[in-house]
Image (cartoon, helix red, strand yellow):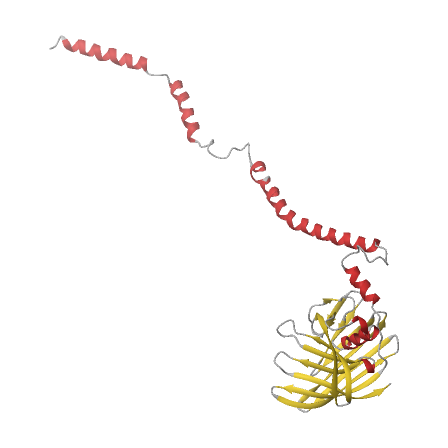
Amino acid sequence: MAPFRPLLVLTVAVLAAHALLLRPPREAVQSAVPPARAFLTRTVAAPPPSTPPPVASAAPVPTTAKPRAAGPVAGRVVEIGAAAIASAAAASAPPPAPVPAPAGAPATAAASAVAVAIPGSVRLHYKVELQRGGLALTGQGELRWRQDGQNYEARLEFSAPLVRARTQHSTGRITAGGLAPRRFSDKARVEEATHFDREQGRLSFSSNRPDAPLLPGAQDRLSVLLQLAALVAGAPAKFPPATSITIQTAGTREAELWVFMVEGQEQLDLPGGRVGALKLTRSPRKEYDVKVELWLAPGMDYVPVRLRLTQPNGDSVDQQWSSTDRG
């Protein structure tokens, strides 16, 4: 066994030398590490620094904001443009021509063409019959109407036992188209008023309700009675039965279009005597509307000889002419 020991040692030495020769140099090992280190840093996986927010975030914001704003603005432009075209057409249209003028022109022309005959100053007395919650009450009322050809004043009052007295008052001017109210008030417990601001084209209410637009020919709930009398007296033939008359009518809290229908002639037996009268009716159009029935007497300059107001619950006030004071 001894002769083989030197041979074994020599073999191990040869193998160790080969191993050293075959081992890669130190620089080669270090050069092989960077690729692995570069891969593990995740520099590539993160958003590249060369393509920051300018492209990713800035571009979408303006593009989404613009379309949202564009819709409403474009709508307003269309409406304003249409209104401007209508106004320009109205301004350029020849005054007498009733043809292709804007929408409001025919109504204005028709209103100015209507003849009116304003009744002279008068004081009318009424017997008042009230129905309140099943009770029948009797009272008295009075309409004082004064006009000097330029201005007018109307005051309607009524009272009855167990019922609070009520007063309506209207003042304004007399124009070619009839009455043009300035102020209207209605007082039962407290007084509320409506102002006709023609310069601003609006109705304002003392009850702090929102203003309402003032339409041509607008009246209040008292002046409308005398305006109807003036219209019918000015041209009776133009108001046969089934004719409707639409007038913007203001109370102390709102203004509505009241439509009066001409019913026809009736003979009335009133406290002041037998009178022929033309009946007009404003029928309720909404749940809480008041029904208004008005009788105008041709033989008395078409002044109201009877006025009946009926509430939705059936309560009513019926004012029937009893006598007249002139002046």
